[in-house]
Length: 538
Image (cartoon, rainbow, N blue to C red; front, side, top):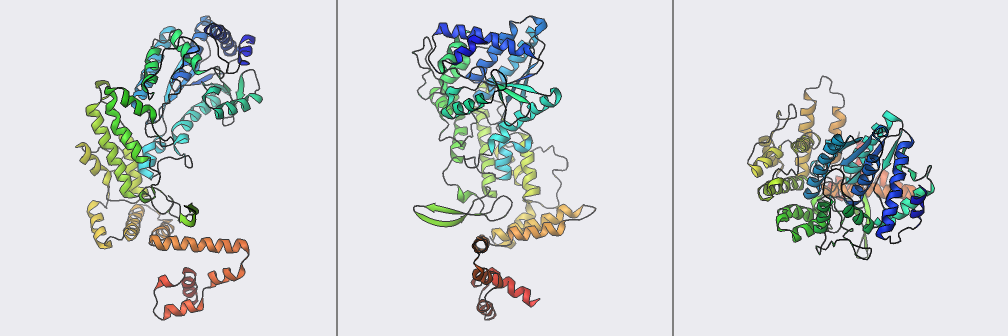
């Protein structure tokens, strides 16, 4: 291990090919010693990009060099399928996992691959189309924990529960970014054993990063010069990175002066956390056979708009108006924080996604014709949310599905197609409400709440639920925002100790009450005054 640790001290200095060969030999011994040191199982996380593929290959080769009687400890290889990965990368991942599984069994390797997925409630489309979560932003990055972190952490916790502890092997490198380098350097200080860092988020698990000081060139030299032990061609991975580079340049790395295409990034095709999906754009630009992905890129770009306030509700997802101080063009105003996508836009995104899925199944290469952008299980959960949580009993999902695909939607959820209320009742309700969206929403919630409690043996909680319907849906947007501002002003007055203002806002104004008696409209009188008058009249 001494040689490998000395090599670490070189930091990001450029290695010659000969130096890299020596370092890999020392690193192989280090991996073998760590593997044989104890019975703690390893969990190796791979995305099947260049870095994690390098680590997996290093670990495989090191363990394969051990005598069979020493290959006793299982190495769990986990990959998280977010279900919104770039389709080309997703196909590569599934192919790699299958090849790994077959080769491990054939060669007697203690490698146990697992393809993880988020639970149905956490998938991207269930949250965006079902619940109405807006496209992710750095200020509201709801996707990463649900799609990537939670599935992996759940698996690791299960291994810890079964074995007491685990070692997580990752392909993270300091050269990836300054932020990553700073984080890894911080963890190095707290190392409890050589090369093993504590895991802040998962107790009883340590992190091992064997290529933490490698450069992009080191990675590509290794992948191109060392054969893949599970029978997959690293040249395919190399070609995929080259195709995802804007200028289609990913030159063969023959020496340390040759640049690599190591900066290519793969991820979710719907990702709005970056300005552009450069990898997908480059794939479409560089390869005519990948032009079929254009509908996906179009949806991603449509989701990624700077201001989507018009597409979203004026209330938060729980139904309350929440205000924030907005500074635009030097002018300060108190505005409501926009909430989930409205019914219209949730239905719009579903339609767009199904259209893209239908089109790509016709235009994609033969091996990609079975592409699934949204699963039937996801649509079943979306339908449940729209019906049961949002009380949208017009049940538009099956209709949209049939209009776009020409097929009848088959919902496997028991009792999904049974309902006392449906599209006909919704149309009648729309006519009665005469275009008043809030009135329609309130009536739909009240009717559907009664329906949901209809078959219960005990109707405990129905009054509280009905009251919540009034609290969230009985005011117009203007009145609801006005009421929220009044509450904000009252809260500020209380915090500032402004007794006179608090009295004025809570006790009401006699003149304002008289104005109501004189026939003035409710809008001309403060909400607090009206409440005070009502309490006195009782």
